[in-house]
Structures are given as C-alpha cells and as structure tokens.
Image (cartoon, rainbow, N blue to C red; front, side):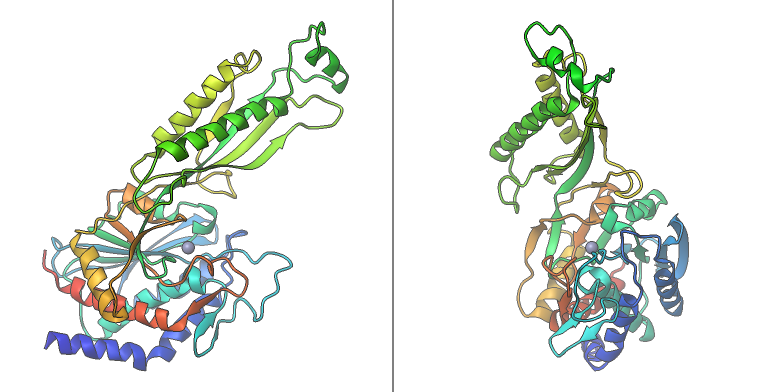
Length: 424
Ligand SMILES: [Zn+2]
C-alpha cells in the first residue's frame, strides 16, 4: 500500500513536470545577482508565499536591507521525532560586463535536454525541486512526524553568513541537506577562510630617501612595506608546500590546502616609499582541521619569517581573519564538514538516489565551499546534495541537465516520503 502511494507520487513528478519547470522559471526570473546583492526581497516574497500555501510557519528577518532570510517550518506530529533542515540560497553569481549570453539570463529557457538561465545549476533548480517535493507531499496529506524546516537564504555567493544567522537563531535538526550544486553526489567539503596580512611602517619616507635606506653607509633604518611583504609571500609559499607534502585527507587530491595570494594593495604614491602593504589571502583546509588552528599555523610561521628580518622583527605583520561578507568587510569563512555515511538519514537519501538514478550514489568531497559548513559547525549532521555541475555554476549560458533535475526531484520526494514517516 505504502509503496503504491510512493509510486504514484513519483509518477506525478513526471506528469507535472511543466509545473515543476514553471517553478524554476519563476525563481530564475528574479535577478538576485550577488554582487551587487541587496535585491532578493521579491524572490523571498515568492518563496514565502509558496511555503504559506504548503502551511509552513514563516520566520523572516533581514540579513541586510532588501536581502531577507526566510525559514519555513512545518511542525511534526511528534515533537520528539527527528527534525530535518533543507537549506538553499537564492542569490546567484553576477553577470559580468561583456558577457554574451545566448538567451536573457533571467528568462529560463527549457529544451528537450537542458534548462538554461542564471542560477539553474547554482542553485535555483535545487530549491525548486525541494519546494516541489514538499508541495506534492502536502497535497497528498502526508505530514511529517518530526519538524521539517526549509531555509531559503541569501548572501552565499559573497560569503555572507545567512545560514549562520539561522543557526544563531537556534534552528537545529538531526539532519541538514544543502541542495546546492553537487551533481547529485552526496558531498562534504573542506573549509575556507580568508585573511588580510598587513605590513606597516610607522614613518612615511620620501622616495628620495631610498638610497640612504638600502645602501651601505646610508644610516636610515626604514623599509618599503611592499618589499617586506615579498618576504612574507615567500614564507606563505613554503608553508603551502609544506602543507601539500604533509597534510592529506580522504577524498581530496594532495595539496588541496592552498594559500592563494588573491589581492595585494600597497603604497600610496610614486613619490613615497610604500609605508603600508596589505595582502588578502584565501586559505583552504581539510575537514579534520579547524580554522582557528590553521590561522595559528600561518601566524606562527610568518612570525618566524619576520623574526629573521632586521626590520620586520621590530615591525611584525598584523592579521585580520575571516569576516561576514566579501562586499561589506572583505572577508569570509566557510567551515568544513565530513559526511557520516552511517547516519540513518544519509542512508535514506542514498537509497532514494539509487532507486531514481538506477546506480549507487557517489560519496565525495566538493572542491568548493557551500553554506553546509555553518550547519555542521552548529552540530547538525550535514550533507550537500543537489543537481547541476560546478562547471555550469557561475558560467555564461549556465545550464542544467533536465533529466538529472527530474531525477533529483523524485529523489527528494522519495527521501522525504520515508523521512516523514519515521517515528522518534
Ligand atoms: Zn551555490
């Protein structure tokens, strides 16, 4: 009887595919590009309205002006039963100037094989599939035993911690599924933290003093902050190489713990010796590591580099780590997470995937980062599982395999159907 009910639900995903695609088209039509961000209110109104129809309670707050976070919650019949969070972001990668698209990026075009439009792979189709699955269950009067929450966040593309703000508000669960781009593999991720390293001279010298500063007998104790930063850059490279040789983690190619010198700013004018130089670095680390320890390793290593230089030892570099937004305070953190393959819910998801795709699911580690890290950091067992490939995410003519999207949606229906019924 149960199996028949599920079979007919899955058949309905196919017979109502047009409705599912219309949902993607609607979500894509909101130009929620980030940067510039601060443009997701209408998209979130749409999701709020959709969740109201499914009788979810809505909690909503502004992460930034015009960029609200929406959490929908369906209370389970039994408050002691297991709780689920589905998480996704509605912001999409920016359309860079000079990009030429085959179609308008905000008008989703569907062909026999693919969906085209900004955000179809990252990750509006993932959100649409999850929302549609929730709708089907609701329409069939299937209600969860435990609480089910869906977090529709913004800011992910620029490292704004919308998901962290959900965790800070106390949203907790026994499993979180982030339906962001994973090509329908069940993934964990390494972590990322950005940081600023600053070298600063207390005195600003004129360009004409350079001879006295660098040559024998000049007698002027000073330095160019840019040149001193070169020593620190070399130090970072040797640390990066050392990590590449000594650190490893299952699911990652060796040397994934990179330190990228991404942005450098230094000096103020050609008539002066550079009195300040700042370097913005992006650091990747493994799930077994914690960013506080990684940051400590970098600071200690650069401290030794500084101690070996007669000027830097008296003017050591300073550090600013992380941040809450790449566009507000020029920094971000994405914590890492591993997959617990023995978790009941993860196994349920894997079974649902295998049924729909007719092959076992791949477990892997994402080479990029998602909001899943914040949920895991809050102590929630978390997996990344969503349609689309990273090659398509952020690309011109971003597209998604239509068949994969349909199978993803069916996987969500099957998973939720079984999850809904588990008692305590
Ligand atoms: Zn994404």
